[in-house]
Length: 240
Image (cartoon, rainbow, N blue to C red):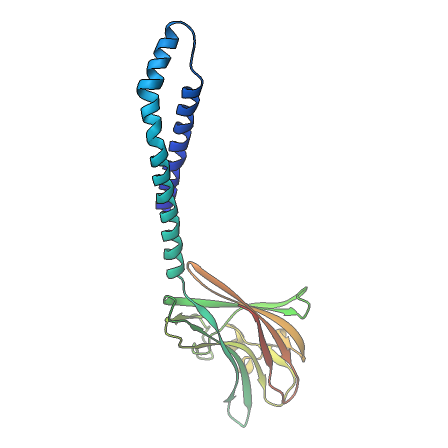
């Protein structure tokens, strides 16, 4: 953008000077010797120099447009193309016959984009009318695991521009139970990741997922429904 700014300042300066010449040429001074000096200035200096401003103005305008187009291309070419991939409910055996179901939202980075290292996620759960925020937490990527005594300190993943998908945890619940629980970076503090303060009973909700890294942010909007006992959670993409 610096190139565009420099060209714009040149164009602005040229426009101001050109206007000053035009005013001087069209409003001669008509008092004695000043008339002679003004006539010499206008016809021997001002007119030839002012004539240069027409092609110069067009040239600077061309440079300005080219710089803006180039900066836009560089901006677009330098951005990741992270998009929604799919939704899954994945079972995990926690031992002693306890099965827990994790709802994951998958994303991938299109090959037409650029690599996006260290992408983090933020999940905001709303009521269905999106007027009341229920929970807002830092998301946990499925591939980032930790021992029971550790915090999920690495809550980011690298999105290579190769369409390889990465799964973000959304809900967890014990199989056969109706209530879900938002699954996020600090869920490990509670048995099987089920934080009672992040309970999601059966119902219809809206969820926002924000993926971000330095110089990049993208929002995704979903409609989420917990259908209750023995039913998979529905996740419908609304916008991305």
